[in-house]
Image (cartoon, rainbow over all chains, first blue to last red; front, side):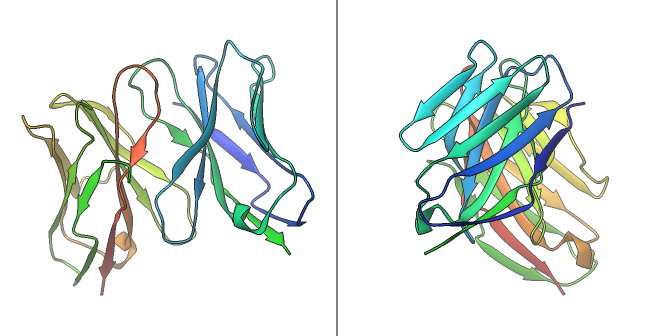
Length: 112
Length: 112
C-alpha cells in the first residue's frame, strides 16, 4: 500500500517568514495530493490540493509543488501569520474513491 | 460546517466495554471513511465503505467493525475496549472522483 513520509515534524518560524513542509510517497500510481490543516481540537480541513498532471498550484499565500519523478511534493506558505499555526498533513491517493494515506503531520508555530 | 455529522462528540467508557460511533455523510456522498487519531498522532486509516459495501481496509483491529447502511450513514463498532483505544475518531465522506475528503468534527473516545 501507499506510504507517505512527512518532514519536519515541528517547524517554528517568525511571523512574515516562509514555511516549507515536504512529503514523499511510495506508490507511483498515486495521482491526488491534498494538504489538510488541523487546528487544535478541530477537524482537518483541505487547504490546497494538486493532481499529478500539474507541477505547481498556488492559492494566495500557499502553494504546492509536485515532482512525480522523485515522488515528492511540498507545501509552501509565504508571509506566515500567527493564524497559520496548526498541524499540517499531506496525503496521497489514487484514482477515484481510494482512501487517502496521510503523512504524520507537521506542527507549525508562527511566532509573532 | 463540512456537512458530515458525527455522534457522540464525546464518550467516556471503561475497559472491556463496547461502543458505537455514528456518522452521517454529506448529502449525496456515497463514500465514507473512518480514521483514528491518537494523541499527537497522525490520521490512521481504518476502513472505507462505498454505497454500502466495504471498499478498503486499513489498520483496523479485529475488535473493531463497521458498516454502511442503505441510507448511507455508517457506524463504527469498537469492542473489548483497551486504554490504547482512547483517541479521536473521524469520519469523512467524499463524492464523485475529486478525491477530497470532508471530515466530521470527530468523536472523542476516552477509555478509563
